Amino acid sequence: MIPGIHVSVRGGLDKALDTLSELGLSCGQIFTSNQRQWKGHTLTEKEIDRFVSTSITIISHTSYLINLATTDSRVEKLSVIALEAELERMHALGIEWGVLHPGSHLGTGDDKGIKKISSLVKKILRNSPEDTGILYENTAGQGTTIGHSFCQLAQLLELTGIVDRTGICFDTCHAFAAGYDLSSEQAVSETMMSFNETVSIDRIKAFHLNDSKGTCGSHRDRHADIGKGLIGLEPLRSLASMPEFREISGIAETPGSDKDRAEGIKLIIHERIEN
Ligand SMILES: [Zn+2]
Ligand SMILES: [Zn+2]
Image (cartoon, rainbow, N blue to C red; front, side, top):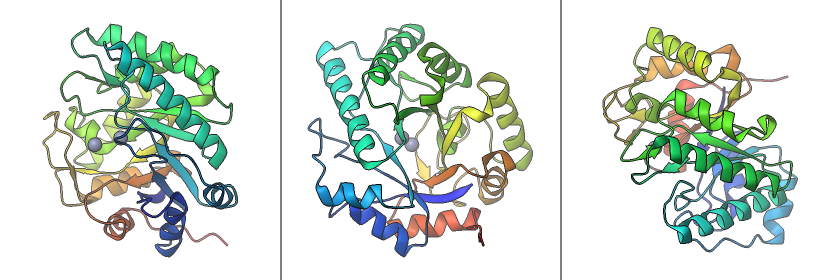
């Protein structure tokens, strides 16, 4: 896996690239717009220039406000607009993948929610630049959130179609909280085997490597520093060293500063020295 962090964009999106270079990281995740506001960020020329000429791999995390499974037509409309705008910004910046929380069905049930999300994502992808794609992020299963079981992720991908522009961002904290054990090397291997049977491992295009404060099956989305939670250092190391994920970004979204996250991720992934 390639070590990366969720990196702050305070002072402009291009600041994230400076931070990653300073920390010696070749990949990172950013919010291209304020994740708690509907109003989208208008890119500056400087931001675009820096991003299209960088060799650092960046993935985008879409807005927390987006809920494609909502029952509120206003929220649905705003969500579609926000996601389309996100994909346009990604295209301008040369970012291939945007990570999306599938959504919360708010009582209508998983099946209805999954159908709604996948049909909207399909429509949005068709209306968006072809060099951009969406990664469904697995969830901890808090409340009525969709995407906590491997089966639900498989259904989302299956119903969305457009295989080359969709995939999974696998969050280790969320999977653990959702009930998939990752707390030993054996457990990691069994959980990934189960994922492979249900979804297929080659659909994973990014990892969020977070430790977990909540117990396995607690459905609590509480990230712990790498090695300081209930998953632990060795299991995360064994996951990060799986040959299948050699070229995949492993992003730490743990508490603290960019520097703290960089220190955490370096505990489990040692940057490969390429000649
Ligand atoms: Zn997320
Ligand atoms: Zn989380």
